[in-house]
Image (cartoon, rainbow, N blue to C red; front, side, top):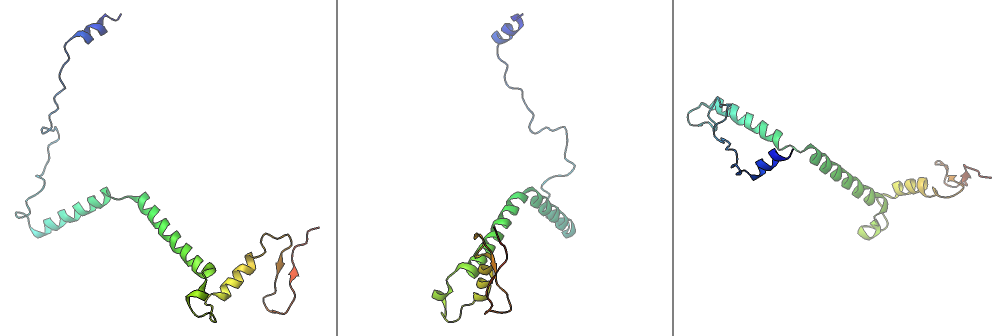
Length: 138
């Protein structure tokens, strides 16, 4: 049963199979790279355009490009939101003129009482009006 296997293991090892590196069964129809001194300008341009297109396709990294774009846009949005809502502009410029105070009061008016039990919404027209509770929990 194992006689064939034992005989093959005991036999002389054969060398590696020679692979003809330079003799391919698929012969090239053109010499590459072409001699640019022997071809006209139009053919040179066509070859350069074809090579650039193939190189661009070969080295394209769509996932990496998408990741970089997402990171760039999220960092831009984060910095803009931080600058408008949370940055202390009193130390940076004129303390009398607060550049984003309207946006800040609107935003924190919406989200200021988000975790409280009774939500209070203020009327946008009158500042003197008393706040009205919108949700009652009994």
